[in-house]
Length: 279
Image (cartoon, rainbow, N blue to C red; front, side, top):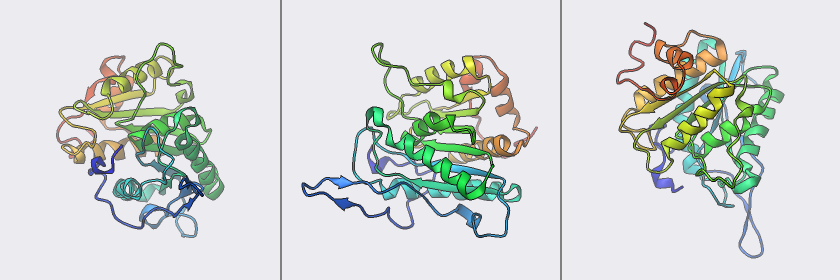
């Protein structure tokens, strides 16, 4: 996935580049260890504020690549992290973005999902027994869904998730790890990079075993969800705070979770969502 198509509704890239990597004798790149970035908004280990829940942000990636992770993809995730940190400040929310070892999913090895699992382990090591919401965009959305089986994870927010094409000969993308988690998928109907129909089919399978699954469609929006970025950010904040801190969900989110398919899996994100969340 090219960096020029980054989700600018997260924010324009800023901050330091990703960690340097060693080069092999033949020019190959050896990926570094995965790392958790500094807590958005300043809350985290070493502060006086107690942490009551954690969002692990998973940046976008590529289908196949052993190159070092893109610093632009990492930096593009940070504004969303700050938005969530501000929204959850009074609840004790900490938000960390993950620096992957490499930028590719790379088939069955799935290092991005492994890095997501490692990140949750690290959150537990730092903060103890707190609920975790895995939040990702594009390939990071797939990593969030795949790593949801970690016992500390209570929720998943997957935005425009990259999912493989249906293949009768291949093992379907797993959904059993989503049981017991609250799951929200958000996808633009005009996404030309990740097929929204594939995320619908996954949500449909997940809903059969996990009733706490819903999916919102952002009509006429593309992969980056730029046209309705304010509504998407408001939806993300409402879901995260409801899932981690048992706040009452906005009516559209509660309705989507309660509705049977296909209604709760093709819920339109209304213009102006967030201006009057609870009604």
